Amino acid sequence: MVCSKANEVTLASTEAGLASAEASSAISATGDWWSQDLDCSGCHARNVESFTDSNLSASVHGQEGYGDCVNCHSLETLEEAHQGAMDIPEYIPLRLPQSACLACHGTYEDLIALTKDSTVFETPDGTFVNPHTQPTETHQENVECYSCHKMHSEPDPKGYCYTCHHTGDLTCYTCH
Image 1 (cartoon, helix red, strand yellow):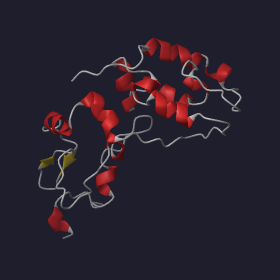
Image 2 (cartoon, one colour):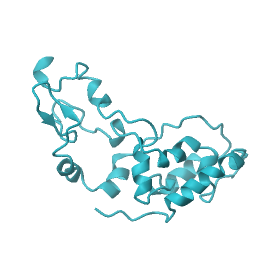
Image 3 (cartoon, rainbow, N blue to C red):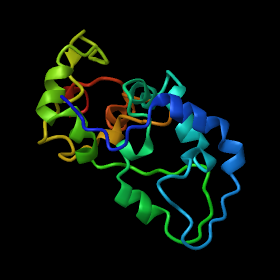
């Protein structure tokens, strides 16, 4: 699967942006102030730093050369989010639609094939369950990638499933 990068900014330039985070943190948030040429780390240091934290999914994207915010967050979305004056929150829970992830990662069927040998979920009887296959008649049909995958924060791959399967047992007969 090949992804066309929206912007040819390398991980090295993202790391260089980290050095200027303190200098650009005093951006005046009034009027028409945002442009795609601004250093995102001025306001979003935690998110930019995640490209170099090997415990976070964003670092994998950074290592692959997708260490630029525009690679996942469309320019249109960023322009809309930065209109007018605003307070800068510590955390911004922007959740990308599945289509944004699949633009690079292929179809959902491709993901099922890629994770067919996954050992993330194991039932008490030792059976491994592919995390991307789910019976739609008993589960939410429109699970989004962000339900399980966190780009800029600590991953919790089982957290979504355990909201219902709180005993850790992934078999239906335990509760039904």
